[in-house]
Amino acid sequence: MRKIIFILILLVLVNGCFLNKTTDSTVICDGRRVSMSEGCIPDDGKNYLEEQMDLKCVPAQCCHPTSCVFEKDAPNCKGTICTMECKPETLDCGQGECKYINGKCEAVFK
Image (cartoon, rainbow, N blue to C red; front, side, top):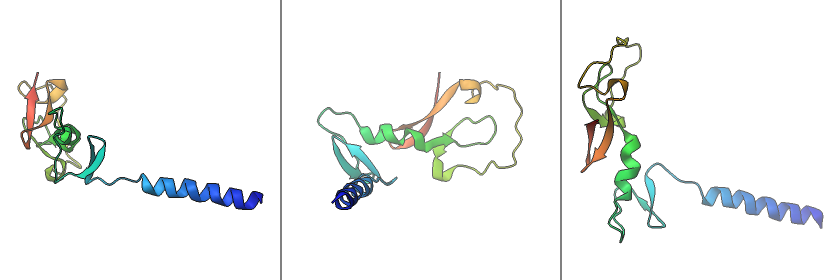
C-alpha cells in the first residue's frame, strides 16, 4: 500500500512539473499564458508584453554603446577589448540603459 501511495505522489509531482513548464515564446498576461506574437494589453491598459521584452534589448555596439538592438541582433563581442573610460553620451557607467519602447529597442539616457 505504501508503494502505491508513493508512486501516486511521485506521478502527481512529475506531472505538475511538466504542466508548469514555460517557453521563451510565451508570457503571462492578465493571468493567462499568451504567445509573444499575440501581445497583451489587458483591461488596466498596461502592456505587459513590452515590460517582459525589456530583457531582450541589449547594447548595439561592443564598446561605448550609443544605441540598442534586440538580443538576437547583438554583435559578437567575444575577444573585444574596450577602454575602461566612461565616454559621455554612451551607455557606459550607467549613463543609460536599453529599453523596449513602441516596438523597438532604444537607448534611454539618464
